[in-house]
Length: 326
Ligand code: ADP
Ligand code: MG
View 1: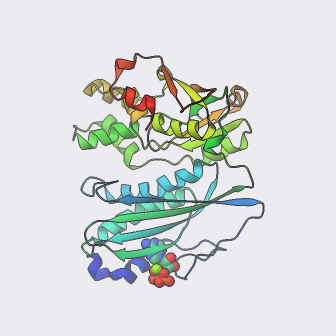
View 2: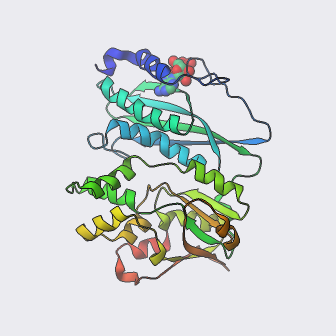
View 3: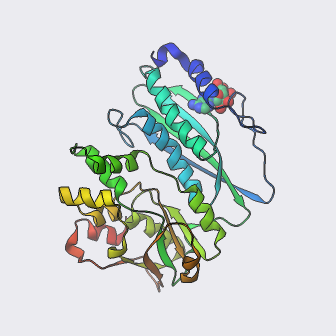
């Protein structure tokens, strides 16, 4: 069945059926969603748009994965502050020719992330689009008053850490675009690109550690994302390229195709791991998986700078580009 037959209200009914409001909340079906408010908490809000042709290729990404990713990248923004996501809003602009089976799969992926992180879909908007699909998700979250971690909190002498391996997502995208032959390793990387895992639990654990200072999620690659922390915190950084964590799958695939894992990790994005800075003492107390990749240094004046150590500058293309930041 096509969306033209299902109609806007048919689709909303389908979504409403799949996403019932949890007890104590008003969700899909009224003019507004109504959420309880925890006293002593702050509300976090973020929104992200995915446009066909710009953020995803409709003929490549399976609809389940697109649904997953649409929800996951938004939850990741709440995780990046150390918050607990409390609900999402999904706005869809869809051509009338959209298949209802495609929508079912999209909603299944969206629902799986929502359930996994106990974050209900509470509303949205549905409209037609002349030819391309556009997906906008808004996410709400909360954190106890004045406990969120901002990009501007990095301190001199902090260690720079990440919660997981880098470069997988960029390699997965490259594998899709270059249409490389699939094997289990390539498949893993593509999954990491299409189905990122928001580090919600990790973000909250980090928030509980007072020595954890600046935090953000990695959506553009550490070369440019770390620059945001340095700009906001008025600091510089040193990164040890030999300390960048790579998955076994990434190492295998890079060896096979002659790709550079460090280049993918630094210049490629969408890993959605958390990038954070903390004191060396706080790092010793961390119980979540993490990798130390560098340290925050003082900045006397001028624009932020990252010093890359542990590999010759000529070892991969794009080095000069990310050295200066975007
Ligand atoms: P209104 O005209 O009052 O904005 P709509 O007819 O647009 O209401 O939507 C009816 C209900 O369905 C609202 O609660 C809205 O939040 C919800 N809704 C509409 N589109 C979506 C969607 N794509 N995902 C989730 N909820 C939706
Ligand atoms: Mg509306």
